[in-house]
Each structure stands twice: as C-alpha cells, then as structure tokens.
Image (cartoon, rainbow, N blue to C red):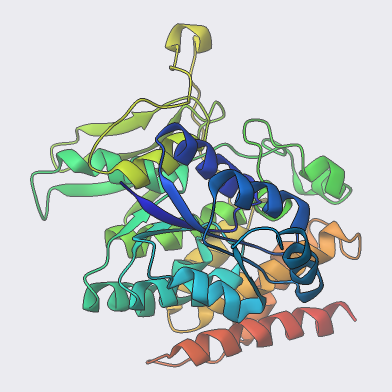
Length: 379
C-alpha cells in the first residue's frame, strides 16, 4: 500500500494525482498548496490526510479554523511544506509545486529518503547536479512525471544496457503560436497565449509552452535524468507521441497515449507495474494522421537560451529559469510584450556569474538576482 504526500495538491497535476490515488486506494498522508483553503479542506477531508499545509499564512489560519472538528494537523509557510516533504508517514512524494519553490522541498524529501515522483522540472533545471548527487547519496529514485520525460523513461525500460542509447527525441506540441512569425507575436496577449491546443495546464506552464521555454527547460531536465545532451526536439502537434528514444541500431521506441497527465502520474506511482488507468484508450484511427516539424529556433529563441545555459553550467540555468518565472509573470500582468520574455531571459542569463562549483545557496541567490535584474531592465 502506497503512502503518499502531494506537494501542490490543488493545482492541475495535484488534482489529477488525487484521481489516481482514489482509483487505486492509495493512502494520501500529506497535502500542501499555496493558498486555496476551500479546495484544500475538501481534499483533506476526502482523503483523511494526517497533515496539510498552505504557504499563505492567512489562508492557513482560515483552513485551521475550517478543519477544527478534525484531528488533521495544519501547517503554514515554506517550512510547513518542508515538513510535508519529509513526513515520516509517507514513502512517496509527488512534487507538483510550480517553479523554483519546488527545489527545497525536493531536497528535503530526498534527505528523508522518499521516492520522488517529480513534476517540478525547475528542481533539475536550476540544481540538477546537486539534486542528482543527493539522490545518489541517499539511494533515492527520482521518477519523472512530465509526460515527455515519463515517455523517455518508459521507452528506456527495454534498453539492453549502458551505451545502447543513441539519442532522445523530445516532442513538443508547438503551443498556441505554432507557425507564427515574430511580427505576429509582437501583438499577442496573455489571453491568446493561454489557449493551449492540447493540454489543460496552469498559467505559468501554458505561457512557457507558448514561448517554447518549456521545451528548453525540459531539455535541461532530460540531460540530468538520462545523462545525455544528445537530444532532438521535434514539433508534434497532436501530442500523441509523448517522446521517444533512438538506439544505436537506429530503432526508435516511443510511448504513445492520449494527452492526459494521469498516465505519467500513475506510472511514477506504480512503477515498474502497470495497472488499470482512469485514462481512455488511444484510438489511432481516430487521429488518422500524426504530424512532425522542426522547431523555429529563430522565432522561439527560448530553446536556444536554455541550451546555452546548460552548456555554460554552474548557475546559468538557475538564472535563465528565474528570469523566465519573473518575465512570464510580468507578461501575464500586461507589463511586457510576449516577445520581451526571450530578451529578458537571455539578458538575465548573461548577467549571471560563472562558478565551477555551486551550492544550493548559490542556486537560490542566482535565481533571486535574475528576477531582480529583469525588474530593473523593464524599469
């Protein structure tokens, strides 16, 4: 029987993870979120959680009052999230927190020797070397929840061993602006950018998909998960092939399925077993045709910014990621243009300082500095 903590339980991934837990009668022991007190109360009561946390202190106080008739412990703030990540009653932690805020909870869960079902890509983008070393030192498994990385992980289950992998094919939907040029992108609004063709995701990830920064971040994440930078990015509009691997004999093994995050979430929880899923079966005849294109790197420059950041190493990926979180927020607030996002991300990344050896403090400092630099640039 699985005992699970879900960090970010009120978001898109978190709520779908609870669907999977409900179907398989897994014990949900801990839940955390930012400030959605009403939904957190419903989740806590439905799953009889031991402990819950809201980062927002005011919302946590409201939640504590609403749960006063139960014995559920209510925590508040970032320290509360760390307690949920390391909770002794759980053996698996699903980290679906959005952004760099998920980094410290991942480290806390690893140090507590939990199995990590990782949906927070920023953990590996900003601090991949640190996180993978901690996982190795603590003999902890990191199982990917991102649909692309789960697909790669699944395709690698048939690998005969080290050296068999030739390269990775990382698929991308292309977002809502596929085929558009720079002139068109100059005038798009946040409302336009939030209309993803295939996936229902939170605002931050949907904007990242529109700029294709999301694919750049996934490139970095794949490098740390699978130990290679030999990664091709291919636009696949239907989001049926979630990614693939190419072996040395040029055999290509792909994972296919309808675009539903409950498949990769469930595989991270049931690995290496495969159980009945709440997701409908893929009907290839219904799709008829699957399409593939090369990315437009000139128009969607964020991919190359991420590639350059990981090539430089050190705190450069953390700086690019921090700048992106800030610039995406500013775009959603209507303070910058869509095309400013890539410019700001690149400038902040270039502004970072080179360090051969980095600590967690260095990563978090680079993140803060990149955000501040973005704010100064728009002023």
